[in-house]
Amino acid sequence: MKKIILIPCFLILSVVLISWGFKGHRAVATIAEKHLDAGIVKTVSILLQGQNMAAVSTWADENRDSKSAPWHYINLPLGLNHDQFVAAVKAQGADNVYGAILATEAKLQDKNRSQGDKNEDLKYLIHLIGDAHQPMHVSGKEDKGGNTIQLRFDGKGTNLHSLWDSRLIDHEGINEAEIPAKYDQASAKEIKSWLNSTPMDWIWESYQISSVLYGESKSGQEIDEAYYQKYIQTIHKRINQAGIRLSGELNRILKNVQVKEMDAADQTETKSVAINIIDINNFIGKQVSVRGKVYGTKDIGSMVLVSIGAAYPDQLFTLALKGTAKEKAADLDGKTLAIEGTVIDFKGKPEIVVSDPELVKVL
Image 1 (cartoon, rainbow, N blue to C red):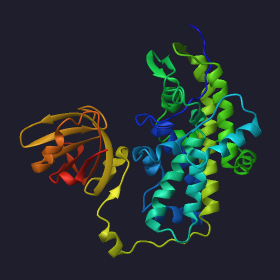
Image 2: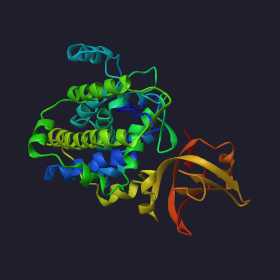
Image 3: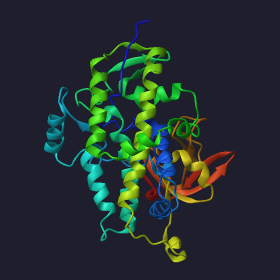
Image 4: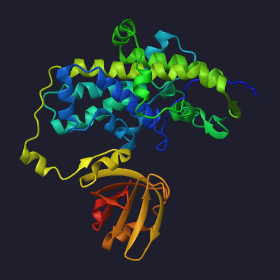
């Protein structure tokens, strides 16, 4: 078997692939939460309306649109030295991951910005700092961040982007809860060094890694165990760096941000809470807004059952369309839906029953 050495080529415009995968992004957020100053923990909790950072860490991918899509990456030519790299980044303007991080941090410190708007700002920042540390988010547009570089790993087809998103992490064979503890192993000296850096430094590091990966990869390569053993530590370090630096940024920028806890009246007015689809089991009996991809429908007469997040019987939850909402059932396969409703438990599976067609939107 031919040994191939690669490194991360990251996401670009693909709305299916999620940067770092949900495991990686949730690990970044969990590590960051562990390193927050005591006072900042409460500020973050209030801004996130009681959700933890891991729960919202992939919100920015799930709510991506044509305006926000470029915020997740930056396209640059290969072969730049540091000065050329900095000049090229600055010449692009703000519509990339570097500019989005700076803009989002400024919004969080804006005294005139509403707390509701800062809820979204914080969810973006949690995600985008993770993106900046995924090497293939700082890459070329011709191959869509490695999405068109086809590879094989563990006997299955994949691509360079997906390999670094999740396939190498999945190959490690540890569960989501174990990842932060295993990855968060930096020394005090390393943490001090990592915190003494800027977003420009973060993307320069990613650029250096992705440049090596581009030079060592081409479509059709077989990725073996030696490749995994060589580069899994790179993934550990980048995710750990992202978590430590995210905590540092939040400790700094939220230090003087004033927040107000919601009183009972405010909470009554809040009709639903935006959640990550993978957390839906934790919201039985709660009114939520959630987004997910359709993996099949079944008309049983009284309602149309829609499998969300995976195909039946492995769906993350079932959307049951009743009454006039059944009109939404036509040609849904492969579409992403925004859904509002109350989560119920139906035979051990989460389900949302919707009768009002306005509560289901095709994105």
